[in-house]
Amino acid sequence: MTDIGAIVEGLAERLGPAAAPPEPLEGGITNRNYRLRLGGDDYVLRLPGKDTELLGIRRDAERIANEAAAALGIAPAVAAADERYLLTRFVVCTPIDGDELRAGPEPVARALRAFHDSGIELPVRFWVPELLASYAQTVAERGGVLPPRYTLAEDLAGRIARALPLSDPVPCHNDLLAANLLRVQSSEGPPVMLVDWEYAGIGHRLFDLGNLAVNNEFDDGAHERLLAAYYDEPPTAARVAALQLMRLMSDAREAAWGVVQGAISELDFDFGDYAERHFDRLERAAADPRFERWLAAASAA
Image 1: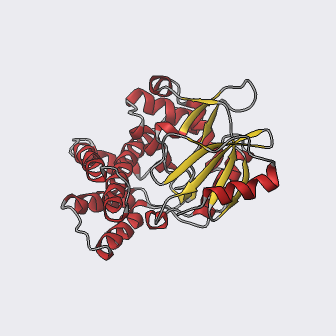
Image 2 (image 1 turned 45 degrees about the vertical axis):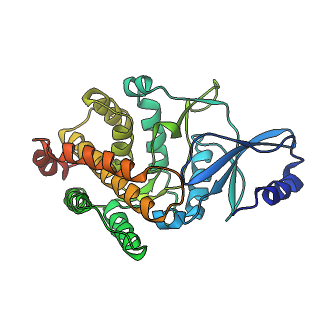
Image 3 (image 1 turned 120 degrees about the vertical axis):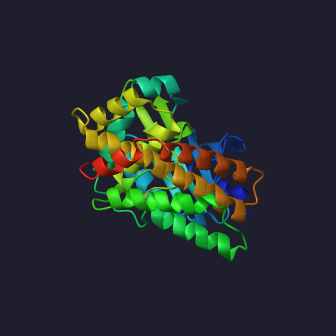
């Protein structure tokens, strides 16, 4: 187990004495987060969980991505890091309301476009078909059994990948849950920040958009606003189709993530239920009569 006391002591030598014990923050399944005051400044201390490398997480990639995003003004600045922790500046923010995000996704779309186009190199690749194969191998090595619906997720991910191959890889966030999107309480700089960069990797830019859309319950109107802001032009039919397909790709990954977590995690969390909910949503989306048309149209995205 990580010795948080030793970490804080080392940080205090560099950044100034701690004013109080670390204050646990809510959220986080694959990590623990604390608010920390050192030398008169506020920080967030992030400690990785056990075996997170089996989920495709690379902590060096997380740090590099966070630093690059901070340079763009869309993430808190990294103050210190090593293999045991990541320390970022505390920024006064509030969660972005879901209705607000769906009505106006433009700030998040522009933040993602800036990161995607940053040219930053990350030392890990994020591509769902490869992740699903890796997760399946890990489950087998841990003596687990894949649920029957895992094959469906693999098949759908493979079909979508053939329609939308990873031919133009870019740095991506890959975990755009509502909790990772924050409204900045400041009149200076970009109005939003993205946090929790642990799944950052080189991947498909449209996966980030699909992941954002499905995790935040975007409807067709929100899809069009997101695409228009991201590409700075009205959305094409091909891009709309590609976004719909990447919603499925996201749920395939989330369902598989729940399965592999059930095999490796010691946390008190119902990963089986998490996987089932995403398998359910994936099956409903795959049954949409437009699915085959999306596959046909998306290749021109």
